[in-house]
Image (tube, rainbow, N blue to C red; front, side, top):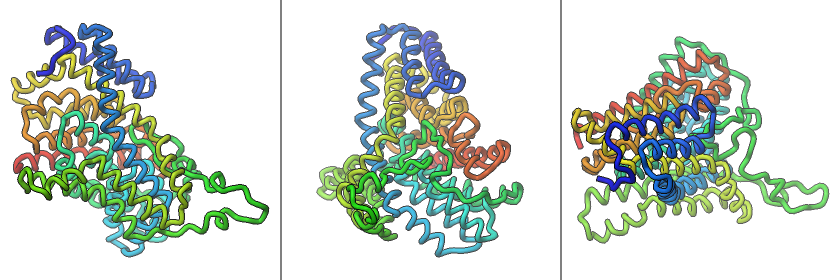
Length: 489
């Protein structure tokens, strides 16, 4: 049991939790506050309603904020740097073009789902959409496959990775809050991601395309696409026409007649395999660590090495170093330009870092006030499955706020005490159950809803029938896969 900052009884703690969460929901959904401010205010409401001293509430919130920023925040920043180099070097374009050009006809939706899942590993949702949508529109215009048969698989691949697979913010927050094993969670998340992408992507895309004939809108460029980005799915690339690096800004002043390409050299595609290996390197290192911890005894030399290089910070840092050479240098970036791309990856994610950090503070107030212990005791007494509880709490907050990150943070804080009663694989499954719940039914309070609507030229009703239902399928199928895995591990 956690040492609490209040002596309040069960009823008061439950009321405090309801008031704190309600404050966050209302401030985000009704008052349209930024989630960062809403989470800070909600934490204050929770602590005061629980009878905690204001100073103790502030200390608890600050501790949670610092711990989360120091852990999860570093990983998000490193992952963003890899994604920035992938986008700016042309590596992502190379992956998309190589795979899409190699298939045709009925295989195209499957290829689109696969390439979306691959480039979705290091990229945030909006960046993936910006990179993929022009390709989807172009292929749909040149073939008779249909827009939704191509677009839904691409969106499904991006969304599933966003919700279930680290190093995306949602899974990282759940893993940090529950003290889950990242390598094992990554492994189980990838297992669940495959059937989830298949069902929500090509299968659902083929089904809905027959019922909603959608014309192909005019091709969009990054500069003409939607400028809005969601608070819980931050952009790290050329969203709304804002590139990471403007070559004209980087170029030294020169005399008339000299082009930027003459100054910095023409851009080269870094190569398909260089891009793929860069994307997969951090994932492979973290998976190797998880496998070593499962298969090798403690004290084994190989396990010790893999535990170090598979540490998330080390794995992602290695990914950044490799990306600087395999993507940046091979694309023709000089050192100054590479540095500008890496630095430019950080400002766009400031919002998500603040939300995640404030969410960690909110979670810590929940835990220190004793709310988590109350919920855990009630769940044990009522014999409620911990995975189902985490999923349902995340679903409720996701539908109310539209924020997958807020849903993940709050649900993980509420069920964290239950994690102490579970073994290591079950804790990883609990993190995935929360991640699945956080994707449930995206609608008009989610910025991703409007981004998809505008890019695909759909009405609100069509977006609900396509995107919103697809997100719900991802949530339900992902959770079903989690429950199925729980029967075997």
